[in-house]
Length: 136
Image (cartoon, rainbow, N blue to C red; front, top):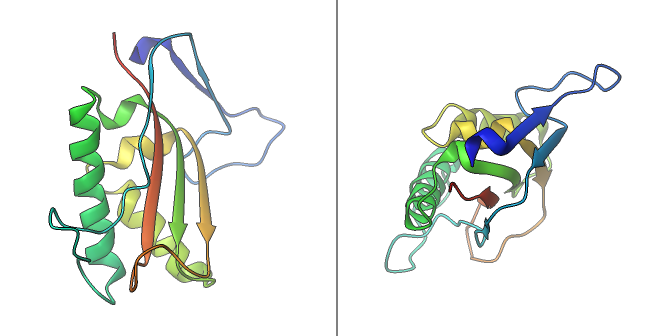
């Protein structure tokens, strides 16, 4: 399916820090991953107070979920990143950690980064929501 994914940045829109404004996917199978949280296999929060550790756990969980769907990061066609902060530097740090990780290719597609007041688990600082065009 990778060859059926086209990513576009129209010249009339602003430059991006690595994502694309538009992702076009030809018809095929799609997987919608639940928000990936910084929880271990037992459901316990990993890295209380540490954005970096929580991002790393989210990356590990997302890679596991992608593999279970027979997909890889480059098959992601939409991402939404939630960070519990309203500080631009913290949002940027989360973005950089994600894009520099093994999950990084997932964020070259249509992507949104949001600062939020609260996430679902006590102490949770980050969550990533992915939509995937499954390979044939």
